Length: 553
Image 1 (cartoon, one colour):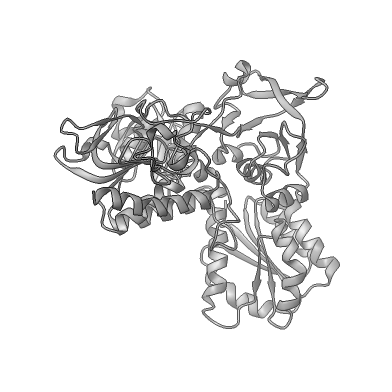
Image 2 (cartoon, rainbow, N blue to C red; image 1 turned 135 degrees about the vertical axis):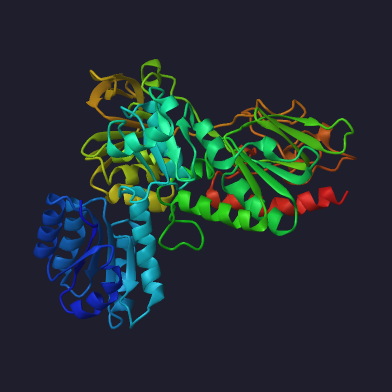
């Protein structure tokens, strides 16, 4: 396979764009065309010869009919490519008004001012962001930080790939008889036959029985902390709330440890593109946002440990601090922040639970979407995560159906996502519907689903190779002490929502404090939280002042 291509369509400014994109020619196959027919023919030629198209750059200097044909035609020919409209400065103000709706609906990924001269880094920064996201979500990795050796891509292998994708680590899967497979197995022959075998560029190699084992290899165990050290704050959960708290706490001089049971970023890390987060006008993937936040926290001194969920909290014997327990070791801390987020609720259909990892997935499973090219995919859920998953899946699948029990998406999904879903010709929404059954093909992979109308009870069987379940919040607080008060649904109560009997001198605890002194809760796990990335990060920032007050006595 040759280098991925950048196709530029311009009728009158080809020289300007050719000069601007010359810097990409070393790593991309840059093609310059003048009209819509040539652009489509070039894309088909590239795809037919084994090349991928990463980016279409469309000059707004075409007439309106040609311009709209270019926008729609490029999506139809290569749905995985990013699309950018560039506008000459003489018409940028008018184009900005004309194409605002197209950008908001996802018809194009960005409208950019044409480069005004050499080193227009604002322009190239935007192009770099889109190529970065394309490489992370579509392209096969050129450099593999992790290699998975296995004779078949089973459910565990897919879980490992999904985890590695969520933490931003390029990975590849290779057969044991391949050249790469044989080279890896030479370094760990004792594990042959115990698949999958995982090899990392940092030097370790061996059988990997679980995602937790992989996380431990990548990030270490909590018992690496010196036993006589009591940290100022332990953050349990590295979703947006926990990451924000880690950044602000460590930047203000608090010794901070962050524990994460799975992948840094939490559920938000599975979002293919968050477009309404402040400061990212072209959007940012949940994985990128999480890894940048982790990098910030590391810079200020936060220590991260993943793969070991917290199993309990108890007071120290002398009573002056808390102990957070994990199966991999204990962490002693003067204050504890609960930021574990929530899990997706289970569907409760036994026939589909048996197919988890083989066409059925809880969460967005971005890596799995690549394997469903040309297939029918069903997304169950009506929240923003479901909308983002549907838009991402539609880049690969021939048909995507969003199934939701409500009549439509207006009560649960952001308007910008509803607009993207409505415009995308590959996505259909089926309201007042639920999934009630499903079954496999001859190789035990999902093949069909039964959909039921919740009003009439009528059923329809549809072919489907992928089912992604994003069913809403299910808190998991069984590891918390009984003294931490929960609401009727199992979320942690804080501040004035705590029962009056737990107030001190008729004064409620601080807004984000729980019933146990020195223990706080933020983000989705907190009762009454907004369940949005921005609100979670806001709580993560604001809780640090409460931690300071507690530590000050």
